[in-house]
Length: 295
Image 1: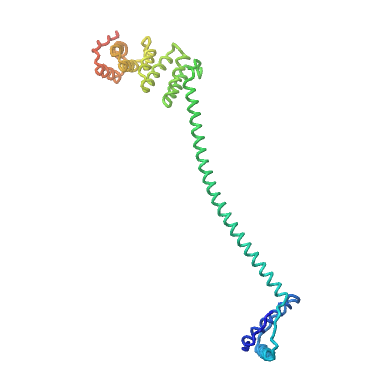
Image 2: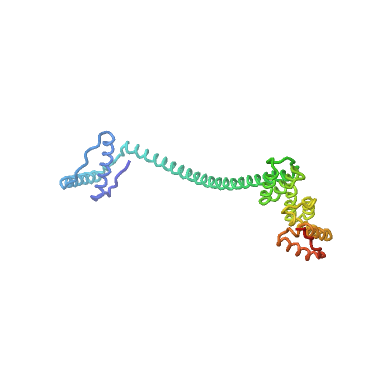
């Protein structure tokens, strides 16, 4: 309970006291009745309020002077309301702490999610790289198996000319597979003009690969019997170069002599010029002029 001190004399203090009493009473009334219409504070009402405050001031002064202090008891409903407000404050504080903790958890989970996303992206990149390397290894293994497989002896198309054309086209883009295709022509069509030309083209591939010994073998196979084919003169010159590259100069000069005897007359000027340049470069003796055929 609140006991007013005897020094309470001013009008302002009484106005404050009256306001507290009015608020407590109004709270109890509002809790039990329907809301009232708002008071219109005009001059008349203010004057009345001032007179009531003065009467209350005089009454309080008289009671204090008589030794009967004014005691104001709080409204139980106000006390209960204050307890509820305090409980709500504590619950609100608990909720704020919970929200802060949840926000911290969310931030931590967001950071972990970002890290997991970056890790997944890195793993995805590594996985794609690994898959690409595996595919490349599988393709290389399949190609190696194809190149090392036995040479087939059956025609892919059933026609020697088409087989040779396809093999030459393949050799232009993929020398390794073209090498096998030319060998397939030789194996599938032995003792044919197409097989001889395939041997000549095979010798060219071996020269490009630096296999001069293999080129000598292929050229020699192509020129067996000295065929009168359009490719024979140039192949004879390539045979001479390959023989010289394998330290067989004497045989290289012999090949040049055979060129002069068998192909020089019908060869093109460019091929004859190449033959002369090769003979000079190898240091071979000049070959006798080819005998002219009777007209």
